[in-house]
Image (cartoon, rainbow, N blue to C red; front, side, top):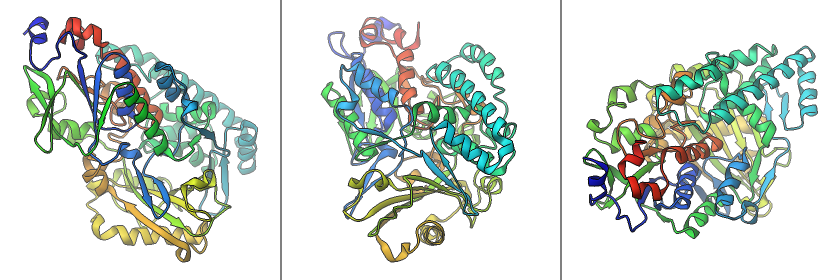
Length: 520
């Protein structure tokens, strides 16, 4: 069937109308993609399974406490500012971002801590305090991380890897970064003290990767934080989602919540729309999935339309860890606790092996403690604190019965916090709820309950990750953590930006139809 015949098909919009794009999911990636497509002439409908937008950035409200469900760190504000600039507006007029200092505190199991900040002189002083001999190595590490940022983020981050040719063009940059090394190997090549090795490698956990396995290219996270800062969105991350939703609607885009997509429809060998869980079908010229890519391919698309992603390839992939998250509020303010804190346990590599390789729920843990009320009192009632504590745990291949284990695990986490940084916690609790890997599977529809899709290994990144444009099915595109370039707020925003290179402007699509989508 040629492009002219396809344009006459009922599944495509009339040339006198805006072509229709459906975006599945309203996380950061989905909303950013929707805004960009709407600005480029498409008529966009965003479909969200939950009762409110945000996806992993959903917001829970309990007894006056505001709990951001997922992302809490904004590191590259320019990617957000660009969305507003494209619409002729200013992000700062609608959202207040506050740079944090320190970015976060890393508390070691012996009670010592490292305050990680954007002040290079203070960082150097922290390194010298822990290990004077590592001062020169820290300088070398920063230089190499900056090089990975330039090559891996600025050059390759928004480049779609649709063909082998795209991969071959990237090989020289990957070779110069020696991307076959793990992040921990790279860090250990510069720093000798185990505390410093932990402090400079644990950042990959923020994007779902084991520092002993992920490519050293992800040292770019360290450079991103230093260059752009770590910011908090006043009012919570949910206020940023609300602003993006408002921007989309002001441009004419639509958002429907409680609209779970059950199937991506195919006619004539190309996407024709979707079917909702309730049975309603909606036509579309293109579908952009901000849902988990493995879930999308495995559950929303019939096998004959995904030869590049058959069941066996999806099943044998190595997936990121999952998360146990306890959201809680206290009737006491813990003024000594900073906005972000890593509370490390007695084991580092061994715990990561349990999580990523052995898929075993260990009795010990390392924790990320988030106290937004350190910066933003509006997140709790007066005189109270709002927290969430996150523990990396194995995905559902561990076989853990989370229905039975969630409460005992929460109690163990609470006891550890009370023993270390939140004395008297049990006496001051006033709000509590939990998220387990089962929620990632059943509520967020993530394969294996993995929180970040495929782990960002070298051979599961770029060309080897689900492509931004489907390899097999014309009209299907991907954004979000589980596609290229990967997880983290900057990564998912860049995945939406990559769409600009693989989805044509609406005017070109109206002129050329399918040929414009497949690049002919």
